[in-house]
Image (cartoon, rainbow, N blue to C red; front, side, top):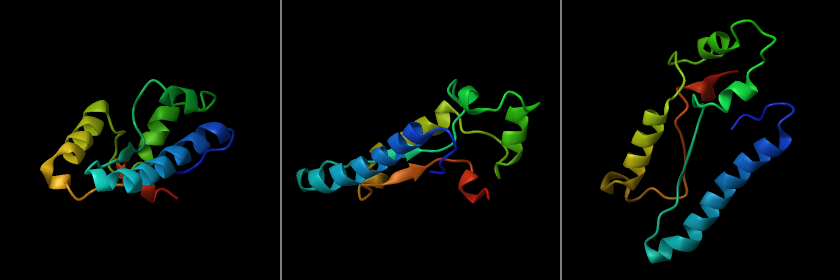
Length: 107
């Protein structure tokens, strides 16, 4: 959601996922099929490739910028998916749900 320098194609792929989600949601809604995406700042092995290892305590400094004080974990993503698959989300389609621990507020 917030592109980083030097990652043009990675950033563009995320934009494509959001646009494709919205497009597929519009196309498949008449068939009762909902399409959504889950986005955010997650603690996965890929995160280490984005951290500047020249900066001491890069992970600690990143977490310090997050309003909720921690990175999202796989369980957080799974719970978002459970919600989107539930009857409670029956009217939700074409959404990129940000499970981002408040990172959208970073400046």
